[in-house]
Image 1 (cartoon, helix red, strand yellow):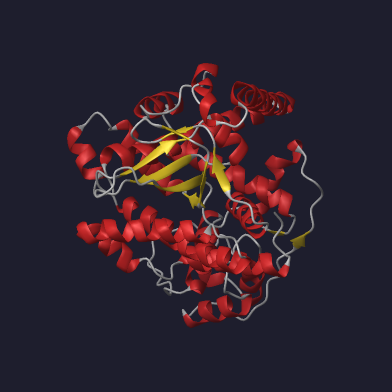
Image 2 (image 1 turned 90 degrees about the horizontal axis):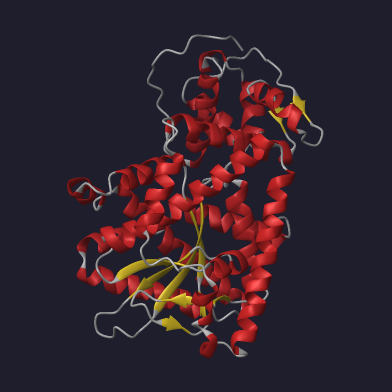
Length: 421
């Protein structure tokens, strides 16, 4: 394949699942100075076969056929070497970055490192290019006024609501401390550069969690009766729930309709999303219900431990850029008004609805009655839609989406035993 100097050009990409793969391949080619017009059929097939570009419901043959339908692919074959790489070593990472543009890498561990590095570099260069991560993080956390104060006193307030009172709380705090110490030691064992990167990624995750809670609760994406309250560190670390999406019914403010949210900012097709979703499927299949133990609702009332339906909510770099902009402009009343109309509110609610519906059906198949709570939450959203035309419009459009297709694909892999949890 010939190298070229990328020039702006209009490439019509089909609006199909194959088109999603083609778009990624075209971007990959442009990033590496390769003209799609010089791409051979064999090279296209190798790229379409790479795990980097795979998408549920597509085949390499279908992608190649779609590219040919666009008028590309010359007959002269050019082989693309497939490398089965050795286990990842830190000193190899820089070389692997160079290799990624030339060969099809099959080792999943290496692909994960490459994905993380590329994502981190994109965030650093496009979103936090002014080295303002710390400032954005501090501002984001300050927006979350209802976030639990992580002190022993906060947990002790729940003594009358747990079975064994303070003794049980002390055991939970000790368990949490051990987990946090284990994480600290893991960070200390990393090379300095990797440890700093991990700490920054952790702060980005916090920014995303706080920003979404702020958008729903304060900006009012879905009206005054919807909110997201962040969970305690115990429920975050031990139950893998970042926040609780609560809907308060106007007719009965004491009714508690809640959804547990576990957020990831690596994108729908990332390994992190797959791993979190696989773990959730395993829990549902095992009859387990996600429970929240130390939580105060939007009204500030302490809740006795309760079960919630749970979803994995994904965000990508474009979402993060928008959320960071919202955080930075949170003191600007006009900007906040604009963010209230953000397209992200449609994407998030659509993702919530289809996730609840897909996981409701899976729970029902598994005989786990958490399916009823998924259904209750969906019904509550529909009732919001009856009073808000914008929400109703989201509901009407949230049917079979790329999110639901991908979830169903992962569920089919789980049922076949090929999706590790």
